[in-house]
Image 1: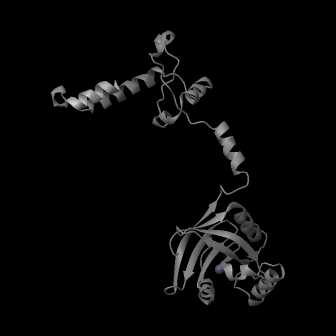
Image 2 (image 1 turned 180 degrees about the vertical axis):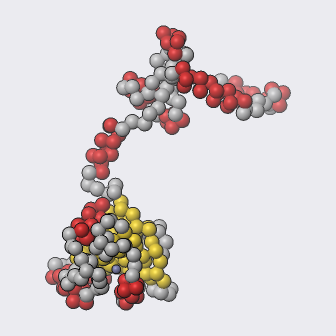
Image 3 (image 1 turned 90 degrees about the vertical axis):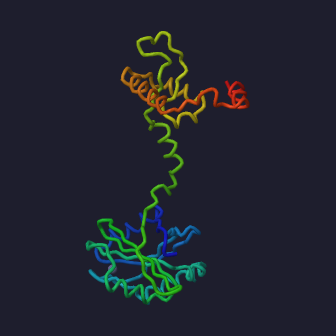
Length: 252
Ligand SMILES: [Zn+2]
C-alpha cells in the first residue's frame, strides 16, 4: 500500500480547491480513499469538518470529528465511519509541505493507515501515506488529478476526434509532376495508418487530412526506402530450401 499513486477525480479536486480558496485561513477535513489491487488509490469522498480556523494551524478537532460521525449516523451512512482514511488540510497562502505538527497529527491517527494531503491557495499539493502494518511507516506518495474523470468525457472525446486530426500524408503512386497518372488509392505513410481500413483512408484522403506527397516528401521517402533496402540481407537463391521456395511461390 505504500506504492502507487493517489488519484483525485476532477470533481473532488474542484471541491477540495473550493474549500481551500474560499477560506482565508487553514482549513481541513477528512475523506474516504479506495485502494485498487495495483496499489493505486482514489479519493471517493471528502468531508468538511466543523472547525474554528486559525491562520497557521490545522489539526484535527475531536469535536469536529465527533460531529461528522453523528452526521453520518443520522443520515444513514454509518458504514462510512469505518472507511475514513484521508486527512486533508490547506496551508492557505503558505507552502504546501508536511510540518512537524502535521507529522504528529498523522502519528496520532488511530486507524491502521491514513492518506494525508496538504494543499494551498496556489494549488500546490503534496501527499503522504502512513501505515502501521507491519510497522509505522510514513512515505511520500504521488498525487495526480484525474482530469479525464468528468461527466463530459464521452462528448469531449467525440469532439476531439471530430476536430483534432493527426497530420499524416499519403503519397500519390507517381511523382507529383506525373499527377495525371496517379492512382487515387492513398498509400499510408504513417505506420499506424496500416491498421486503418481502406474506406477510412479514403475518407481521410477526401477530407484533406492526408495529402499527396510533395517533391520534398517524395525524396525523403526514396531515401528511406533506399536505406531500408541497403539494410536488407538478400538470401542467395541456392540457400533457400525447396519447401521455402514453395511457400514463397504460394504467397506471391
Ligand atoms: Zn499543515
